[in-house]
Length: 95
Image (cartoon, rainbow, N blue to C red):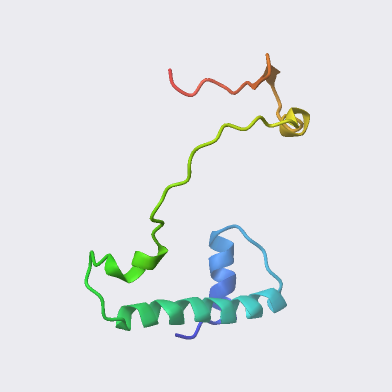
């Protein structure tokens, strides 16, 4: 499926993004590659719910959770607007 530069610029406008003409042309080839990949997925022979496709990707063992102390709290809280007693204070979300 071919994507035009104008379509890329239109999508960018909807997403409130700005691209140069050169960037838009570069994105056309990237979008075409993505759509080509989706087309190849449509043509593949698999059943919905068939989990055997990715069996080798599923880990056989889960890793153990480990608690680790983060030593650089000053870096962590550097951009936080409001801090209180070592925690980041945020506005109330639920009434």
